[in-house]
Amino acid sequence: MKYQTQKIAYWYFLAAMAVFAVQVLGGLWAGWIYVSPNFLSELMPFNIVRMLHTNALIVWLLLGFFGAAYFLIPEEAEREMHSPMLAYIQLGIMLLGTAGAVLTYVFDLFHGNWLLGMEGREFIEQPVWVKVGIVVAALIFLFNVSMTVLKGRKTAISNVLLLGLWGLALLFLFAFYNPANLSLDKMFWWYIVHLWVEGTWELVMASILAFLLLKLTGVDREIIEKWLYIIVATALFSGILGTGHHYYWIGLPGYWQWIGSIFSSLEVIPFFAMMSFSFIMVWKGRRDHPNKAALLWALGAATVAFFGAGVWGFLHTLHGVNYYTHGTQITAAHGHLAFYGAYVSVNLAIITYAMPILRGRDPYNQVLNMVSFWLMTGGMSFMTFVLTFAGIIQTHLQRVLGENYMDVQDSVQLFYIMRWGAGLTVVIGAILFIYSQLVPRREIIEPTDEYESEGA
Image (cartoon, rainbow, N blue to C red; front, side, top):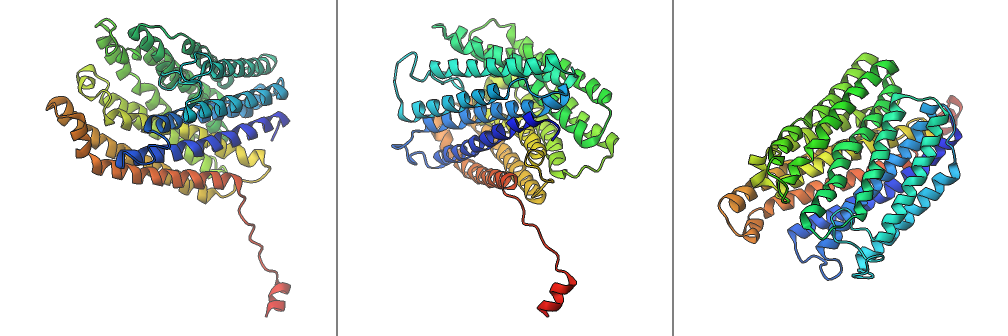
């Protein structure tokens, strides 16, 4: 480890993995409710379980992004972080806000209170006081990392990362605007949700991936930076106007049908560029880095993101298709594989690379780590196929033939059972991953000749 303040990332990664465990277990619980709708419904209704699952996803991904920034920015800027104390204060605020939000969701505290109670907007249900805490934590983070970069070396990786993180924080401010008009509400809501995952988060992903490939392959920085600029340009070009593929469902003018369809179709390009970039860098580098698991996660992230966010997104983004598939299990299939490939995997890649360095060990439990990769990736891929087939059946029976929603749900029960089995595989893989990071492998001591003779 070159810089002492990189240790800050260790605590962010620990917190991220803890919330990751909660998120996948919540997903497994929610998946079983599809199989057995009354499962623990009196203890925790489905809407609360789903809320915990989706919000935990956002929180742990953000913790991973912040940890990645605290790990890579000192190396890129060639100086220590501006203020380690501010970084730890930021972490404390985020964990306090997370605990407060969870308690509010689970026990429905302060119902109807505009400041203390939860809001009814998907992904941004957090009470207003928690949202204020998030903004304060984001401002602390942005000040800390920006000062570090401004006083140190400027690189394309750190600049793109900062651009993505600044955009992420500024777009979240729309969470405070909750107009009474539903069309306006949804329009500004998509400014957060879509422009995060198909805009600013793509920049964060690309910069982390570039950093990893720089370290793992040994390719010249100039080559990696050229690819990075191409990815950023295509991501912003397609992602911003690609938001329009949501607009024609919420009462905005009809021209968004064409704008949304055309530009969201182009969103496959940056993900294809990321996948090509990753494999070309590995091919050019031909470097035998000892951390094989980190390289596997990096290549896996780019590949699965291309299929989940790119291919599965393209399959139902054209408005003529989306008219029938919108809100079906096809949407769920796309969402699960896209989030897993683009953001979950890149976070697990940087954790896999950084944790051995932060703990002062060589890469350890790599086989177990790679087993976790194949379990999670295989489980998520199977889940995607299952949900896709369920969505096709749902679309035909419900949207084309006009059958009752609940009757259609009964028709796809087998797919929900298979989806739960796939989710169980993902959870096992996640537990193995966390174990591989935190528990060192046992050292195998080879017996000496003297020991052998004594044993004999």
